[in-house]
Image 1 (cartoon, rainbow, N blue to C red):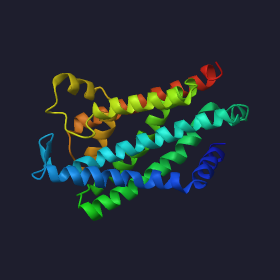
Image 2 (image 1 turned 30 degrees about the vertical axis):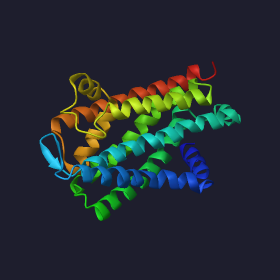
Image 3 (image 1 turned 90 degrees about the horizontal axis):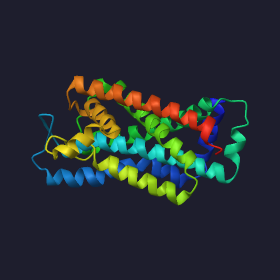
Length: 253
């Protein structure tokens, strides 16, 4: 049943080349526009955790984190389409568990996220000269896969409970804006005001970005990054439990 759900996700993506192009290429566009543009503004580099590096190298992990969040948004939004045409409720009658349903959807989209990340990292290394830590390749892959899954499971209960399309879009934009700018995605946290720095350290997007930043360019303290990695795993597991709980209890209310 998991493979069947993955195949359905593939069919949905393959029928819209524009959507597939957007998923695969837009992270690279973000890196080229923001990374290269702001790199010129920080000609002497940017300091993060006592390390000086170019802004494009600093921002690469932010782009990968944004891409994972974007994949999760698109995947969770698919619940609206399925619910409007009645397919979602039909799925609930099939001989599969709710967990299999969620895992099938996220496995395909994790592979999609991995593909777009390979494109982004490849061009970042070749065109922008980012010095990637290849010895951390397994950590990079794990960060991308678990990050995409975590954000999907986080958004799923809201997609299932919010009935109006415009309300869900408003919710997504507000949450994305708050999480994105109260995180380490665009800038180091050391020089931020105390209240904003505290909020950023409690932000799962910061945990995800910091893990990817350490994996890609070795910026950050290993002990701190390990704590953030376990915190994000706990966030992902809690979100998965709440998603399954919503499918069992709250989706028909």
